[in-house]
Amino acid sequence: MRSGLVSLLVNEATVSAIVGSRVYVTRAPQQAAYPHLIITQMGTEENKSLDQTSGLRFITFDIDCKAQTSVGAETLANAVRTFIDDYTGTAGSFTVGAVLLGGESDDYESPTDGSDKGVYVVTLDVQIQYNP
Image (cartoon, rainbow, N blue to C red; front, side, top):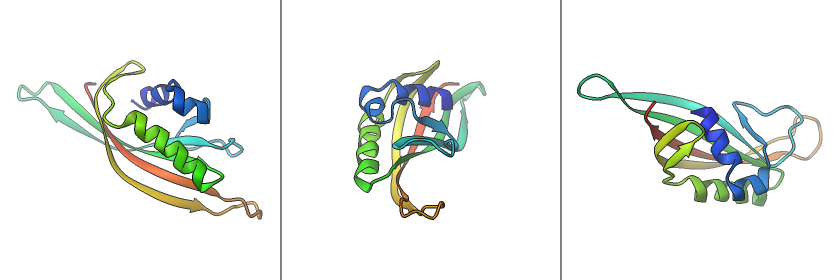
C-alpha cells in the first residue's frame, strides 16, 4: 500500500505542483530539496470475515509535510488533507475503500549543520482501509 499512496500523492495535481515527485518512504535523502513528503507506516490491522477469509485491511501512515517555512509546511499539509480526506478509488494497484484522517501535529526540526535554517513539519495521521 505504501507504493500506492506514493503514486496517489505524486499524481495529484495540487500536491505535485508543490512537491513534484519528492514523496519519500520512511526517510528522505540527506540533500532532498524542500518542500517534500515523507510517508511512514505506523501499523496495520487485519479484519477477517466471518468465514475466516481475508477481509478489510487497515493500515496507518504518518505523512510528514516538510518545508523551510511554517507557511510552506501548512500549505502542503492543506493540499494533502483536502485531497486525501475520505478518498475512495485506486492508489497504484490497490483499491481504497476509505481514507480517514486522524490527528495532526506541528513540529520544527532544528538545523544539524550549524546554520539557522531548520525545517517546519506538519504531520498528518491517516488510516487507509482496503482489500488486500
